[in-house]
Length: 595
Image (cartoon, rainbow, N blue to C red; front, side):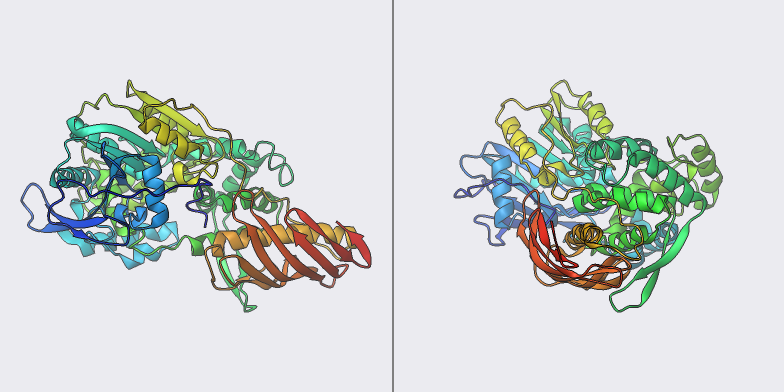
């Protein structure tokens, strides 16, 4: 529900078949969609035998073709054909809107999707940063000598092979996240075959930083900008809360129990890196972003229950299959690319001392050196040589039209990265969308970014910024303090906060359909019923106040709205019934009309 919200109406035109498409077959349900396999060598030097079949999908232009655009997904680890779904009606409408009269091409990179998928179960299922280096080493051992042939330079040559197979002289490239780095790598290696570059959530060729220090330095300011005038009901200073709590947890990690719907509990640990990782995750989940200011404030003041629970929920909702995002391929690519402080051929046993020296010399802004674990260096420390130092093409970059799009709430690829790339292109333009996180075009519910892309493709004027879209979910207010006895008005305030928290929790974890029940903070459970309904059963975020009733989503565009009938009870509550309809919550509690 939250991944592709545009708020635009699209009309799907009759699609024409592409020219020069050989050895391909009709596939999927979209008119004219064809699939093919392009076979590429595993090792282009020829020293290691073997080939990889790349799964390629081509959607013809709606009208007279003006060119071809390749869609390049992120990760690394996402298969572009899998992610962009050229067979889906909504996807077809979107891509023909964005790229009028362009043939659309998406293929799964080597090691992803249907192109020799790498599946390393330990790494795929790990949720603890401290365990990932060992799982990465196990993954590398399973790949053997092929582990060295999944770097970005290899992916760029695969893109060139697909271009040649389809017979296009020049191609436009739309890269998202890591896909922007791959698009730029291709432009450096094959500048004569690039027509234009659309870069969404930009990773420059020389990044990522091995410690993600640029991410750590920008994080408090980015969160503060997101919260400007919106989070006052949760906290007076979200940036100060983040810095104080993260450094405290780095020095003294906490462990506590998260309540399960069965009444049992599950132990969860949170340290400084886990907190920063949670905040970074929020740039892909606007509901998590809405919850975090209140959660972090509560933890700073000593109430750790909301933090422990949201870490657990984020870990569960972040689990993906290798077909959706291969963490084995992620490791194989980032560990081959680097950059790292050690030399590429250094043995794993020789890297620790060099790594610590580099960390000591790095600034993490408001955080200590412990924040270095945000980056890939720790993950790749045990990766077999070569690790890091895979050169990209020599360039120069082509002088072509470039549009870089950055979300003002993008934690993992800050706007400064997009600006640095735009400065390298005489025809470069930067569009910033305030309040939006990672993967801007499909996350911007106002459609401003999508309209800007279409205008740019048509040679029209593109703005430098969009108006901040209305939030899908407003930031939550502060969690209620422990209550021994609440009168009608105080019970009403607690019930209102509980409802907003429950709505956000459902959207964050179960908004696409039925899922396993979730425990409340202090009791009861939330049961996801359908794509638009959920039920609360004695659900509590305050020990003495519980809510029960069925809730229905009535508006799935910004801002989300709900309706339902709620029974309020509990040993500290003024009991009664409340009716919810959008922003209105009213009824009778303790014999008194409220709302």
